[in-house]
Image (tube, rainbow, N blue to C red; front, side, top):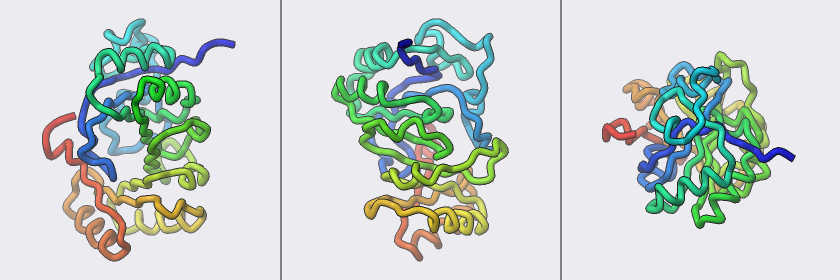
Length: 225
């Protein structure tokens, strides 16, 4: 059987800027490829696979925006352990990382004593059998890509982080949550789209009414990745 390979787009040490784990030092591992099509996405260069952007080594891919390199879980985990020994967490993000079977990658990272977190749109299920230490589902509803959010991804989430632009977005979230039985300790975070003042005021109002949590893209306020 062929060994699974993952399309690595980028990898660097950072501080988590969003959601429940804001402020935690992490290694961000970005996988290439996404079909969701969020209009506000700030990594659109990771969406599509163009042959001219495929390279043969991690050194060529990392930090090169649209470049990607296919590597095995062991190669990726070895690279991270060698180049990013400081943080205790690795965050797998994208793109949409859950379009790939993630269990081997998670196990390889945990074997090197990392805790592993995931950020996913909930539109793919390649993570459901993987032993993640933390799963953040940021459900993307009615996006141009036409992808459906799978309810089982919400049921397995530690955190649901939802991007809000207007009150209709809250209505859509309520409709979605009514269809699923969440874990009792699942966090729900509202994140205003693109730091909009109007959206921020709406999020503040709702989180105070419902006892939820506000997520701000603090890395953008700090001017870091």
